[in-house]
Amino acid sequence: MNITVISVGKLKEKYLKQGIAEYDKRLSRYCKLNFIEVADEKAPENLSEAEEIMIKDKEGEAILKSIKDGMFVIALDLAGKMLSSEALSEKIDKLALQGNSHITFVIGGSLGLSQGVLKRADFKLCFSPMTFPHQLMKLILLEQVYRAFRISKNEPYHK
Image (cartoon, rainbow, N blue to C red; front, side, top):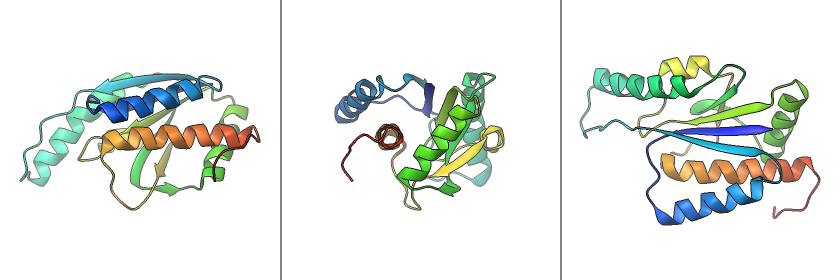
C-alpha cells in the first residue's frame, strides 16, 4: 500500500517534524509513505471572499498537479464524513481489497481546500468539527493511519 500526504505549506516546527518522523518510521512496516508539500500563498488578515477563493484556487492548482492517475484521493474537509478509528481502518482495508493501492490524503492550507480539489476527491473526511492548524493535522492524520493499520492487523495499541 502506498500512502501519500499532500499538504499546503512547509513544515517548520521541530516538534511536529519529530512526531511525523516517528509515525513515518512506525508506518514503514505497513505502507510506503510519501509527503508532498505545495507552497502556501500569503494570506493577509482581512481577505474578501473573492481573494480567499483566488488563494485557495492557486494552492489547489498545485495540489491537483501532484495528484496522479490511480490515486484514491481523500480530502480532509470540515464538511466531510466523520469516521471512528475503526471505521477508518475498515475504509483503508476496503480500498485495498478493491484494488486501490495508492491512497492520497490532502490537507489544505489555513483557508481550506479549493472547490477543484474537493471535486477531485473520491472521499471527504472530517476529523472533528473543531479547527486544527493544518501543520498539526498532518501529525494527527499519521497517528490515525497508524492506528488504522494496527486495528486492521489486530495488533495492540492504546485506546
